[in-house]
Image 1: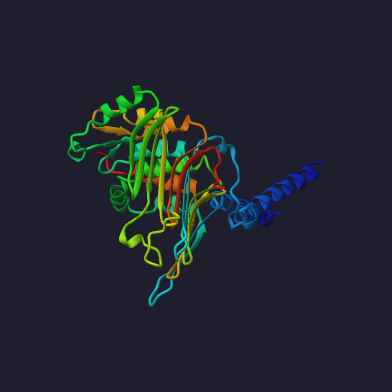
Image 2: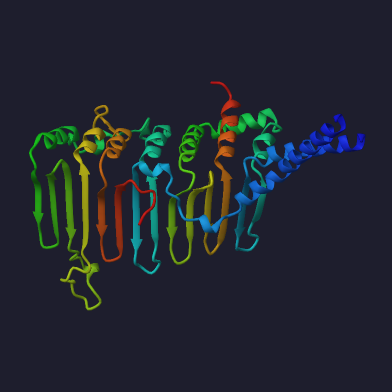
Length: 144
Length: 225
């Protein structure tokens, strides 16, 4: 009986942790460069991990990052806030014989796809994650 | 009785825990690319005004560019851009680049003038027409392309007009007024966008030549046809 209770407790905790971890969906970055020594980056991780991981970054590094991003932060903040109003929309599409660039929102995620002869890039990031990251950078920016 | 209740509560907790455990899978499934629903949905935002840009090039590359921009998004985002001459949604105009032309006075003059043609140029190689019609400023340019590099394969100028380029710009006067509503040396882009959003469906810019077609238009659809 005690074992069952312990299992239930652990199971419940894992379930809650899992639900929280995946509540923002997946963050997906795929980069393939088709050249000698080209980079191949494939990152698939729960989007909620990113803001959580930012809490573990040393304060000095975060301050430095905030300082560098300071100029762009209000712009990113404004864009994300507005994009949230358009959850499924094609914004930019460039198409020719060789390449295809697509910027859109899909199911509350920002999706950027680039297919070119020399590289393929797919980025899928929940808007709420960008919002969280931006807010954290703004909060931790050095005071003027 | 107490034993039954305990079992029931334990089962309920187990069922809830299982559901919570499985819920991330549902999220994962949703996050996978769904091709069946890849077509852009008409959301509530379709009531808004959208600025569309479409460029179709018929050259060897066959490039097509489609931009769909909600005017509300542009209105909100532009003030956040502070770069070079653009600040708070306004562009600073340098008098040095205006060749002593007082744009504001010209706009005032156009606003108060009745409909009519202001500029008409008719030459062998190009026609230019600037007019005010139904509270719209209209600029119409036809370049007949009689330059050396515009000859066809036989080395002749194409009289049929296959090589000519045509530019048509139609801007509501309200938008121009709003654009010049800021300070003396500034153009208020946000005010212009706001004024634009009150307009009905309209084509603002059309450029056509033998290789490219460019269209900029305003409507309430969030997709290009």
